[in-house]
Amino acid sequence: MTRLVAVTGATGFLGRQLVRVLNEDGWRVRVLARKDPIDPLWRDACPEVVVGDLSDAWALSRLAKGADVLIHAAGVVKGPNRAAFDRVNVEGAHRVALAAREAAHTVLVSSLTAREPTLSHYSASKRAGEEAMRTVLGPRLSVVRPCAIYGPGDRELLPVFQAADALPVLPVLSETARVAMIHVEDAARRTAVVAAAPCEGRVTALSDDRPEGYTWRELMAAAARACGRRPRFVRAPGAIVRAIGITNDFTALLGAAPMLTSAKARELLHPDWAVAQEEQTQGFAPVRYDLAAGFSATVAWYRTAAWMKH
Image 1: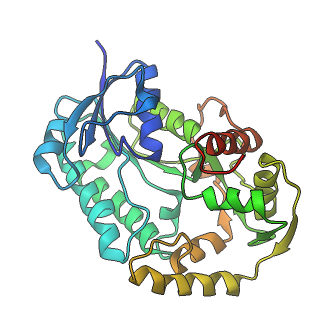
Image 2: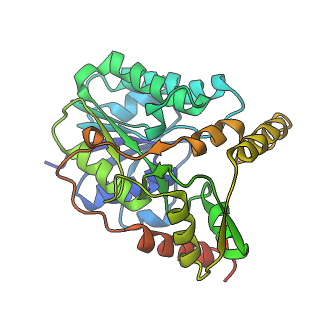
């Protein structure tokens, strides 16, 4: 009998890929969405849709009813204050856990930043969301913590690629910090593997096949190569990055949504976003995208979608 998986956040950057992968793996997929979604990635998938959001207890109950596994991938990455993050990433997660009490296995898509909850409102809310769900579900909860996710449709790293495509000199935030990365399709596949496996109640970090991560110089050079460019590099002093973040905090108060806030600056300047040995899970197949192939595919998508110039 085909197993049923319920998914929140299905229309998000990772969730869209996750629904496609789950369908390819033979799952019957049910998703929570504010309206009936139409997505080109789902050409071969026909997910059942429960209309609602994380504030709707009835919709969450309907979503979880009869599900063998529930994957909670919904969340917010931007917000004006801690309360805004907590409404979705903590309170929403708690409501999902209450609805999923009858499911044998629930998977929470958290973030590697939850490892450092004092860095930002976002990282604190992701850690608190893990704890809120663990309180309800106990060992029936698996947590995946993706590192920095990139790929087609990603708006967060788009400015990095735009800069790599246009600037003769690119900034390097640190010469020693390490940042683990993963392409969105590989993150979806690895999340699906965790969902299909027996629940072990553990926390697993998701990265590509270089869990030790990349230096900022390697990342910027790879972005430039994907754009067909060979710029020079200059070290960007941390004080300047933090100052820009603080300045952007004031623009956020006026309704803007800047990428680089003071909280994001603290996350970017953190020296260790590598994945430690104890955070890794054995049994994953090799990723389909190493950094070079992933960045090249991402830039090609940006150009086709007219997000970047040809």
